[in-house]
Image (cartoon, rainbow, N blue to C red):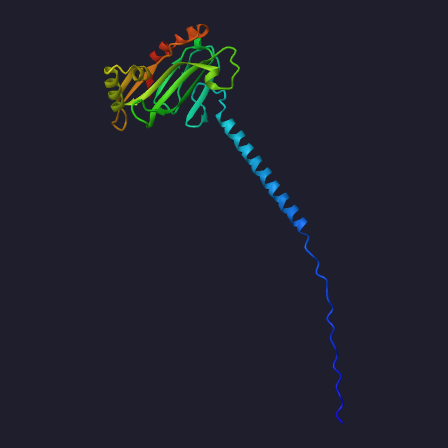
Length: 220
């Protein structure tokens, strides 16, 4: 008789599956999200500090060095014994500031045209510090004593037409002509100036020096 072959039974051992702890994964995810939020907050705060430092005017000499502030340049000059020359590379002209003005500041840039919405008029504004000013706002720390704007010949012609129609606001904003003529490209231009009518009594003498500054106007 044939022998019966014995078959071995293979018994598979059951291994216990180790459950993944969902709680640990959730906590790690939360820590990552919190760290990301903190990092974004620090970057935002650093950016705000950078923008603030760029907008804060610094003391420089009157030869034209300035700090960029958005679309304008802001500079200030320390008080000196003699007169000072304002020679900014952004301007097509020079001015001489008398020593009697003491400490003064200036701003250059472009402003919206008086006759349309284009940002086309180059300007210079000179101002002096106000005593006991406690605000960090530049406009509240200083009082402007003189503003010079450069207009295109066409814009100035439109302004003169507006003046003939008794549009006093445009006439007052444009001011009085200093010089005119063609530039290197053959385009016509006009320089005009305005002075404030609301100078405080304690700086009235400095405001009166605006006329002397205008007399020193000289094209480069």
